[in-house]
Image (cartoon, rainbow, N blue to C red; front, top):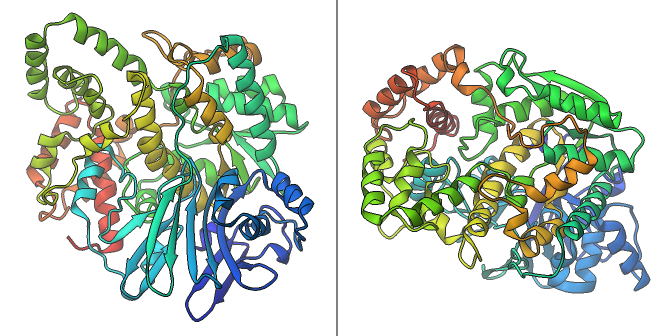
Length: 591
């Protein structure tokens, strides 16, 4: 995992435990910040990936109680916090982190992950003990580690393009869930885990739209200020959309010199956000750089398939990596707008589901069932097919059709393997995430926050940026901003039948250039449909037509390719299949 930490490395071992660490130096660049790190008694040891943004406040509190520090690093603050507050220390950490802490007195290992899941943490338990790492590929170095595919995880992948929750694509491996801390007794192998944080429930309050807008401004500015703290150069990933532009606005308040970067597609103007980013950069006087993505080679896909550990079907991994690699010579840390869409309802489907719910109430159920059956007969790639299919179901059950790659019938036809009896289907899993929501919109947002955001968006950003040894930060995922969005902002300030991301756009209309189109929603994407006609399409065809026939029905793949060539929208499905096959070949995973 040298790419995650090219600056330094360290190893610690004892009779019952061993830690290894690669360091990307961000805070305290001296050898004092080296990990693994131990407390003064050499009885508590830590290996930690991420940043604790409130480490200065925690340090001051600990020092007032008598704690003595030897370094200026946030890692030592975590160690001292554990010594003073025990296992509850994790509840006080504000930031992004995956950490392992071993207490020799208790003979206990603690594994913990941040609230939103920005930093990854995989673990594998056997009769011999436990092995854990920030990336799944590191576990392959363990001699006894098995490489067997988990069939229900494969089905989840082909449903939504990622493997969610604590599932892993490999048998026996689990991911520590966001907002959780786990304990492992090194002497007896006893395991337990618990949630130390959960998404807040919405509680209607007396605050006005103007007051909530002001509070969002205050919290976002504070989050950006904290996340700009580093002993290395920091940049902003600026797309020209509302979220990254607001982050840029707050950075310009905090610093006189701000560097911004954007990726451009000059030969595909419908995907090129450079003019919008340029407008924002000019407005705030940033040092702005535009990076062209037109030189992306199909050969890059095999490298990304290796980097992503588990297959992940989001093609925007390509521009995310390209912009990360281009930024890295200029900065070690980059702030972006991730999380804003999930918190404040920025995706188009937040309006679509409300429109469909109105249709459900107006159209008799027999007619809705007939439309659903007719839609099911349409080939994949017909726009709107999934939404029409969901008309026959309850509104919340219909959430399972959002961003669905292959429905249950298509997966049954495509895959030669089957999930074990009793396995929860991907659709049922997704709908269950919305349990306890106060509205249909809230249900959709919770499902997205707990699955799509953490297992697609944040995985995409973490692996792509860390491959370039660039640390990315997300001010919108500050705990206070999350709790405001889910706990206090009403649906009427998020999305309705016509508008989305209403509260942030209110703030943006006051802070951003008046010429900026605030209703635009492009996303950090590539023109995959157009690329399929060229070298990318040739490479994807070659990979897919030589895929393992024991895993895929080749006739289904050939039909998808033909439909794509006739103009249907299947490029994302073909990309998902290609990434999976490249990943399987790279890691030699058995069925």
